Image 1 (cartoon, rainbow, N blue to C red):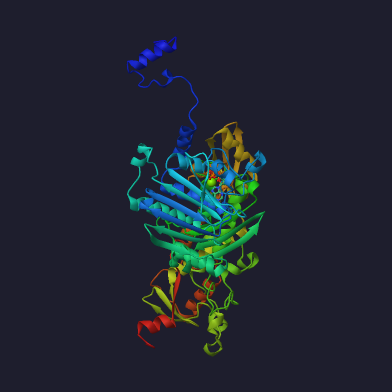
Image 2 (image 1 turned 45 degrees about the vertical axis):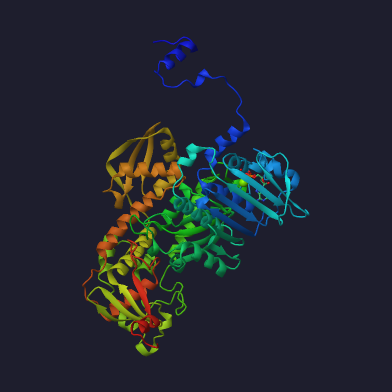
Length: 608
Ligand SMILES: Nc1ncnc2c1ncn2[C@@H]1O[C@H](COP(=O)(O)OP(=O)(O)OP(=O)(O)O)[C@@H](O)[C@H]1O
Ligand SMILES: [Mg+2]
């Protein structure tokens, strides 16, 4: 059927064929109230969204004390009070008008936003779906004023310098939205989670959260690092803080600060991941990818890392105007940010060795026995195949070990974080004594990590050997992928791949790394290309290599139930002290635990 004019279509829709008749109405300009309600639909999803917008306004106003009072999960009332700069009387009605903001004025400002707000949208949106009262006294003014959405003029109000926004009966006039609200407890859980996340981003600000007149938390300002760590412990749990490494690194115009949990503190959910860009909390795929990459080698399968991290960078290098709720950002140079994050964290995690964080021990003790992983390429004899090297290493130091271990009386346990072996338990664990007490080492897990790290560095020193394929593999790819491959030729070659572009949408794989020649090359190259397109960088080849090395290390490592001499055990302890990421095996299990004397005393109720 051919439709020739609108009326025919309308007739058809009225017969129910198409099911709607929107175009039967005249085009008209919507009322500003309805425009605000439409905007509210995007920005104000639930009570927690209101709390987010109000708290962000208070932070933008430079407040150093903020109180959040909630009633009935925010559905009856949300009140945020601050001691910020306040709003002058003449500007109060403007604050409730759409597209009115004090935070930006030009496109140039929009491209380098340093404040959390910038759209001039939050207050009018909230006001259109609730009964909102805004009261404020501007710094320097002698009296306060208050305004409501439907009132045109502010009325005098007693108020200290700062601002109070009181939001009652949220969604009272949008029943459809109200129907989506969950129970009071659920809505409050969202609010609490949100306030916790924001509280991590503003250490200098005192913050109180109350629900139904009960104080949920009251956080004092946290200026020193100790205070900040106490706040993090309060918000994320003491267990996180006990297992966290402090990170602080600056490069390429960026600074990354914060805390990352040791791999052993991984989570089954990604629920302890807090990331802030210039104090704005964000969820970002690139960030998640970079962090995962940093943990790739040390995390148990399917587990999630935990972190609280703050990235600071030039506001012009990040676009915050990318999402209605401002939870997402776009980095102008995403590859640089990705590399900076993953490298910084990788290095931080690589520092986890037995000496880390233990006052009783000195870092990096002189090794009693030179380990295989530390020898220079010339010493290791590069003619040896990697597999031979594993086999050789698996025999576990049949060297002149006894002579190089100091006699008992000359040993200063403080020099050796993991101490000295006492015995082997059930052929599985090494028992050792150090300055703090007892150390238990999982023999297989420890050896696996040592072998793996050694293998990786030897492999890096040897370079990646490449071998030609008997029959080159042809790959059909998109034009973009073919271009990405062409522009990354050098990278591919360095990793042992030889790939040519044989047509606009065609690649030909001619050489592959020796170690990878049994893997699914087609899938690997495709994964690498899609990484390159999405993140501008790919770690997949390295990951695939590492996986193979890891499997080899596992097979090449000393099995449980093998009897070890005391010298062999001591050699293993020294190697572990000098191994990067020595605290976990390749699968993320801990390699050793410390039980200090106080802990042992407790077991025996000593000193009570
Ligand atoms: N707590 C406050 N203290 C001082 N001024 C405030 C406060 N809350 C709002 N304002 C003023 O009201 C204006 C409008 O606030 P609103 O939240 O609607 O927009 P915005 O913060 O500028 O942008 P966005 O919509 O992105 O949040 C702000 O630009 C600011 O000048
Ligand atoms: Mg705002």
